[in-house]
Image 1 (cartoon, rainbow, N blue to C red):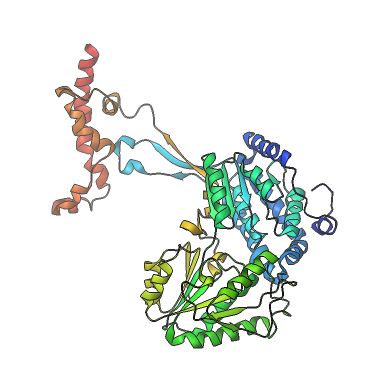
Image 2: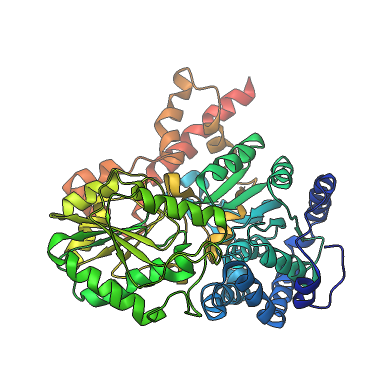
Length: 540
């Protein structure tokens, strides 16, 4: 950002999105690497100060951030506050309250199982990876850029953020926010499209974090592989909602599904992509979908201040083409017509969809809802399993039905009798599986993602004694060394399972410290046998 502004509003009023000079990207990454090498980001208070600064900026620039998203997506500022702004502020607070605990070393207790480790100390230290890159997405441009960044900073890394150029106003706002409020030796922003992203991915990062499409995800994965670095890919997929006949309240199910489908005009990676519904309740469910949609947005979706728009003409035309090629029966939810100039696309249900329909070819990412009927729950499960694992799966029905679905399918996340609300649970991980992504984040899981889990083992020089210590190495052969194979395995890798296979053994394993008691004979044998052997060897 070449101009100086006193606020995000000033930046939005005076600046178009300026792409970063490609020639400066390498030096930007190098400066962050140099900064990380100083060790400044390892200090916990320094990390907290950076998050406090970000929180201060979020609060000071709240209105401008919400306005920026509105300019890009025509998304209601109230919806943005609920689904993006509040989530980021909450995540910062969660980190500030818990990061000392979450970054604390985890101490092991292997000495209880392995006598050779009796006086050792083991711990897993969560250490920062180094310099990481985060590539945000346009559909939730604040949330999907800042949530992973918060985790990267909390874990002690330096970071480059690349906002999506498809949400240009928010990209400008994010650059101002991070430049004005955070230490430039810790966080830098790179702006641009394919050429700038290509140059950015050519740099050596210690971790790559990407949110977006599977096709670009493969490019990011290849870039990470080139440097043997870790990668998180938050992708997407066709997330189904399965509505069984035994659902407790069909109207609640309809409202929650329609909420997930129409939030951000369906441009959500975990939106309900299609509905599998039991034939006996299908017609009633469609009627309830209409009631739910009108109840949220009114009779005219085009005139509703809360109904969003498609991000650009390319995506609008993609949705129009999918709908035109569908062989299902269109069920409009109102009288509004699609408007390419306004990028308005009305909510549309498509009944009688077959698995081979155009609407089932790829993730819809818009306010079109295909309906597929089933007669048995296993039939619905087979339809889900015939496709790639989705980022989310929603099961509506009795506890038994829902559990049957969960144990018979795979997905990044799963929700019973609700939709998308698992995103609000920052104490749990969010991520995909297979084609819907790899890796996880939010809360403690973000720190784990952006940390190297370093095992540190400490053994005193006085233990084991020289005789017992001789168990670790040659010579193994000869009658005078046969004791090693009798004693050694029980000292390092004791086989405790046989103790449980007899009646007396099962009684023995009920004693306190039975594992320690079980190796005492071998320990004594090692003490008495090793001494004369060592003495004889020293004499020669």
